[in-house]
Image (tube, rainbow, N blue to C red; front, side, top):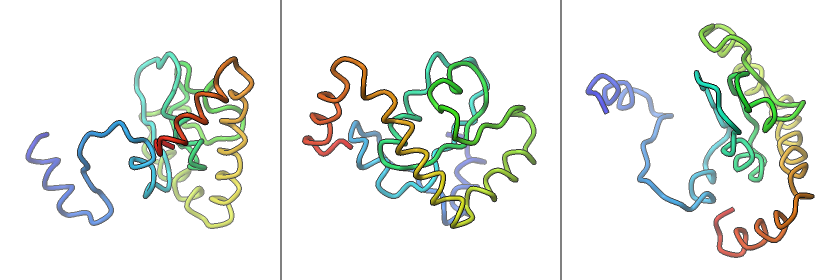
Length: 132
C-alpha cells in the first residue's frame, strides 16, 4: 500500500484496515454498506451475495455480472467514473429509512439463490461454522 493511501486512512476514523481472513462473519460484522466500485467486467459478484446474507445493502458499478448478482432492488452506479453519482447514491442509502428498505432488499436478494441445488445446505454449514 502506498504512503499516500496510508496517510488518507490515518486521517479518516471510519476507515480500518483488517488482516486477511476467511471468516466472512468477521468481515461483515461491522460493515454497514458493501461498496463494489468495479471497473472491469465481473463474471459474478459473489461478494454481493455474501454481503446480502448479512443483510448489508450494496452500492456497486453496473458492469459485467454485478447486475445479475445484485438483482433488481440494489443501487447500481451506471458510470463508475462519475464520483457525483456515487456520492448521491451513498448519501441516499445512508438515510435511515432508505437503509432499512435496502437491507430488506439485500435479505430478499440472496434468497433467490437458495433454490439452487445444495446452496441451502452450504449456507447451513457456513452458518454453523460461524462464517456467516
